[in-house]
Image (cartoon, rainbow, N blue to C red; front, side, top):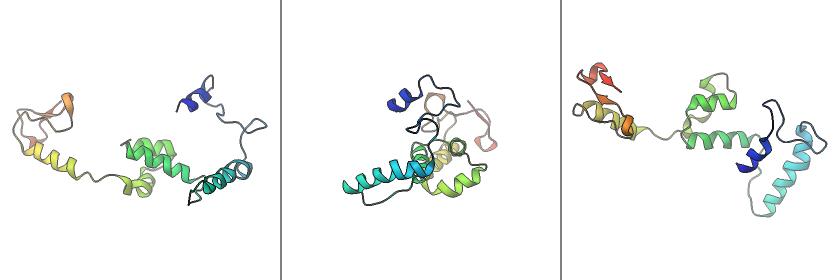
Length: 139
């Protein structure tokens, strides 16, 4: 991350971060032949058994974001998906089962008045004087 931050110093949002050897944007064919393929060959020589595609980096990035519980609409925007459906269809299987959260929410909803929803910390939702079944909760 620090390497990336250093590369971004003094750059404007429209500026390129990584320039081709002659300056300017990388051309995909040149990048593949002169950077990606030699890197894969070196990795294979060192024991890597797969040959990932450049596009696989996109999926890896999305997977890392989801593993860190970045909300799917943020992942959607990051990947440039027009619809959240595309993001869910492609990466929904990576979401951890929310069973524990569902059980905790139901137990909280059925529990004593004033109980704090587990995992909510100090700013958690607390029951108000109204019935929880009627969405009578206050923050």
